[in-house]
Structure formats: C-alpha cells, structure tokens
Image 1 (cartoon, rainbow, N blue to C red):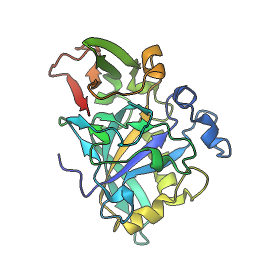
Image 2 (cartoon, rainbow, N blue to C red; image 1 turned 30 degrees about the vertical axis):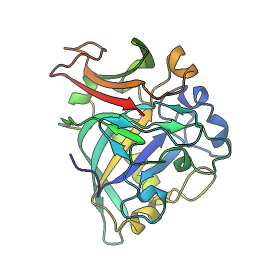
Image 3 (cartoon, rainbow, N blue to C red; image 1 turned 45 degrees about the vertical axis):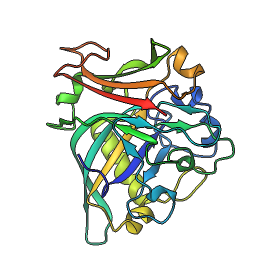
Image 4 (cartoon, rainbow, N blue to C red; image 1 turned 90 degrees about the vertical axis):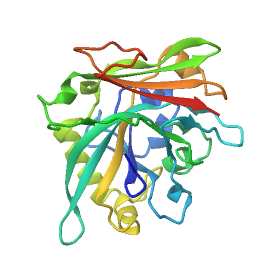
Length: 265
C-alpha cells in the first residue's frame, strides 16, 4: 500500500503509563485536556511535499535506520489506521472514515530540548515502520472486527527474543472508536501551535488538503526490557497485531495476525 500522498499523524498519550515510561510527561505539563485520560494531542510525522524535514518520506516495512548522531531510540508499538478525510466547503474536517488498520512502529528518539513532538519522530527515510498487510475495518465502532485484536511487540538482540511492549487489547486505548474519531476531528480543526503541539489544520492546508490520513493512534506501555533498552544496530523489531480468538501474541505468521518485522541499521 502506497502512502506518499497521505498525511502522517500520530496521537500522543492514548495508552496509560506510556508517556511516564518514555520520560515525556513533563513535555505536556502546560497542555490541558477535557478529561484526565484524554490523549494530549496529535502531531505530524509526515507531511507530503512539505518543505521541512517532515516532507521526507519516513516509512519502511523492512528497515529501521538509526540517526547518524548519538540518539536514544525506542520502538513505539502502535496500530495505524487509514482514514478517508471528508472536508466541508470551508475545508474544515467534518468526518474521518476508517478504512483499514495495521501494525506500526512510531519509533522515537528521546531528544532533550526538542520543542515539538515531531522533532523526535522523523530523521531519515527509514525512521518509521509499517506492515505491508492490512485488515479491512468493517465498522469503527463496538461490535466490529477490531474488538478482538491485541497489540504486542518484541525485540530480538543477540539471538534472544524479548517482549518490548506489553500485550494489550485495542479496546485498552483510552480513546477508541467514535470517541477517538470525534476527538481527532476536533484536533485537526482546532489544535493550535502551542508547547510541543502544532497547528494541524495549517499543515492540512500546506499539504493541499490530502484526501487520506495515516494515523498512528498511540503506543502501548513498555515491558521492563523495553523501558530500559534503546535500539542498537543489528536488532530485529517485531510489532504484532493479532486476533486473540484465533492467534497468540508471538511472531509466528498466521492468517489472523499482522507482523511488522524491521531490521535495525
């Protein structure tokens, strides 16, 4: 599936404890939310044809390239959803139509002094990971296919496979289904350039109002190993989305499972 013309957006703080473990909670100390468990905001990781570094296509299904400078990079295991964006006559976003989902690695560097979330998100053409296989969404609401899916992740280092993120049901996201869609629409129209966040509607305008968005909806909490270990060249990353009715949370291929496998360089 080709993503070059789709805006790439991510959700910050949509799984309990992730921001604390990542050492990023303080970045959002001045950001207020309507509910205590609400995500903190959305950020861009890819802006098609943009003149900034965010215009560089960062997504790979096979390779993760670490920055050339010393950086503490961690896997951020997520689910990515492909949305159709619907605009009104004034080019406000009025609907997001979920089409398909897959496994995603929103790899992030723990960069001191970064003013925006996006500064930690994209640094080369292989700084993000996405699986090549997608699952069609029948309905993005309770009772749909996503009710049954879980998300987990692993890192293989020196021949040993370690759990990297906790195994979590997709229903464990703080905001999901209609609540997430309504919140995303609000943020795409109204989020301002403030603190670590950016004006998303201005980005949509600058990108020519793209018709589709690739949105990573939040990273799980880390396992003990994942919290304490940064990526190294030679590591193998696995982000797994699986149907808990038919599969297990491992890296073995099956028809009810999506496995993103990236080799770290």
